[in-house]
Image: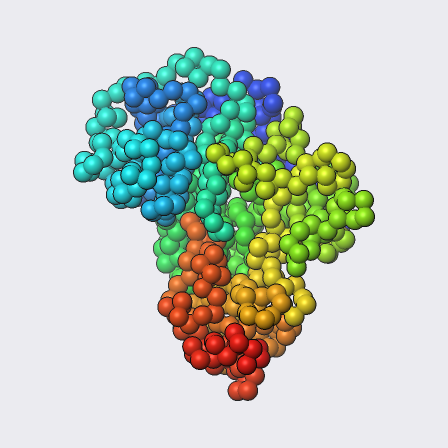
Length: 593
């Protein structure tokens, strides 16, 4: 390992510590204090550009002040929660910022939710008020009978059944509330509720404390060398931490410009980035793959982007992405909204999600422990304690919980102590210790670089071997004509483990025979998808993570799938249509797979 990598790591850590210098367990500073201080330094500068309009820092705060004064007029008290169901727009930031000035907690709800899941999120927040944009007001109104009948307020003009928020805001002052109104707000008091993606079930509301929210806002300012000259292009949803906190904070905490968009668009990404003179962009999940799958664009290398910040850039995408689009640097990180395991890849090693060399091990809480995928449980030795994974051996990533250290706390989920306890692993390396469970399998190489392997729930066992859905998906995605591939395991009657299945979105040039050849050439027999499901698009969460719950439930039953199904038919040497009769033969054991 060269000295350059060590120097990059040291530089990134020192810069991060400087950015965090005000964040301490005994701090008097709140999120509102921090943002107000930045605004006072840059009042006349442009803070946000959105759909051709500009908001200065002063205008952003004036709008936030109206939200604060509106909430005071409604009698919302410090510590109470207001649900925010709003599409990406400057008002989103102004709203939760303004409410934070009174110590009010904003519950940031996924805008894709409707019906029962939406009602669930409102209910666990115990919100008496729901603030929406006009395009989402109906969703909130339709679930009122499933909730405690909160008052629904909407922007964009009057909406039947909802109260006109725009008129209400116009009727209150835009003056900054006195600092005394949030007197008593402590570092471990809630600032926000941020919901998990819901890839494996109902969303959980992670409690974001003041100190944790401040840390998120400043997370990449140091490592990303943020300055007031940066123009940060953000297409990610504001209801999740990567876009709504780390992306927003990168721009606004450094005095830069936030180039906010309603949503990601592969077809408009480059012309937009070039026109806006963006210098930094934030990514997550499959954004890189979406851009690579798009046709070449005349402007895709004519941008001024110096840095991409995010997570989930898969190794087989990473190098092609930076080479094709001429991106100088990616700052890949690993972490979760609620967790205490956070690492960064400061030197840009392709595929790595972070690095903790042996000489820095004492400074980080992350450890990898051996995990029995078949039994779905950590491996424990004869003394009942867990066992650390070997070099290059996948293991579950865990982080030691230290209640007195804000870096290593785990605040859990609001309204669901059972879900909180599920994320805690006890008696790990000594009796009585407690560690946060990430639910992710990672591996670490001899130089201390960490690599993502899979979600534990996405790793399955077939023919006596463990199969990583991400690794299989990466191979499938190299086949021409594959737009997206979502891999998972399905139960087969009379068989141990789960057989591999892939939900595929085909594109131009898709050839089923070529796909069969690819998986039979590149994958061992146990890892090859036995079943295929062809569908026009793959359902994702708002952060581009694939949803697998419904796919796993449908299995390979043709009667439950609206798409065309295939199975690996050894008799023809390729994928053949899976008919109801063949399905019954497989389930009865009359046909081997």
